[in-house]
Length: 388
Ligand SMILES: Cc1ncc(COP(=O)(O)O)c(C=O)c1O
Image (tube, rainbow, N blue to C red; front, side, top):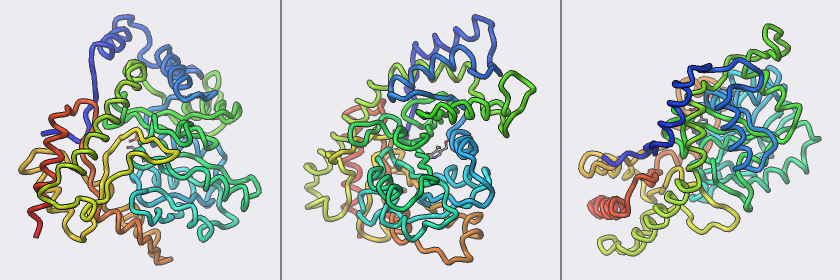
């Protein structure tokens, strides 16, 4: 099987993790600034993103939840977010006491991110946060979101970026996660770099950074002096050691993903003798998008025809052993828990619903070889040409 994602783990990671074990020092640190490996990792992340503060936590979910707490979100205040995302984005809002307000994604069927034009209809006096997700690593339209806020908000509405899938993606040459008041990252095992489980929050705001360091440690500063509400969101030293080694390899790993994505598109566009013109059947991801560079966390395409996606996916998995995967069907607002919540206002998200039934992601992670990309592209064409 060619899995949809696989961590690139080598000697560097082993060495870093063994150092933690061999030194027999702390496996974690409850001090405000975290343990040694946590601090090393945070410094590398800060340098990579060109931000003032990076705070490591133990998941992307914790990063989102802690950010909302740090911004002072109050019970019942509204957070505008897409439904076309992993459910963690919405769960963090609910856990922090906020009310999730789902907004549709763009109708341009290559951009699976929130449509800034839809913000107006969702904005109320209770709106406190806009939470764009850079889905699949594809940067959201940050300028338009910022512009909207400048025009219609009095400065009391924050942008929190869910950059859990987009470490290394850029918008107008600036890293995603560094546009909002805070940006949140995940280091879950499938992500472009990993510590198994883990996450990080970045910000240029000193006060918010201070609050975040407290929040990850039960709101304490010196121990047993809880000043604000927090939890245990500390990243263990062994995980931070992994994260440190992965950060050093990140540029190289991102380069390989870009290479694979470009090759996939090239092959799909040129080798489709069995399917006369692939563009007629499939919406390919944008490779040369102006102002946006993806980290290629996922290579996601969409089938134009209704009802063929699931068959093609099954075929790719069962016959060709390719880990083609669907992210996300159902979208969050159609999961039983959130469906119950949004039923009252009969929410309709047309583009989200369309995307959830048509998208398919293919493996382009750094361990996929050129030969395997060739195999994936030709298998997809084959599966497509066999559709009735
Ligand atoms: C868009 C998005 N948001 C939030 C999360 C939550 O991250 P984690 O799984 O590290 O808690 C993830 C990752 O799984 C994600 O993909």
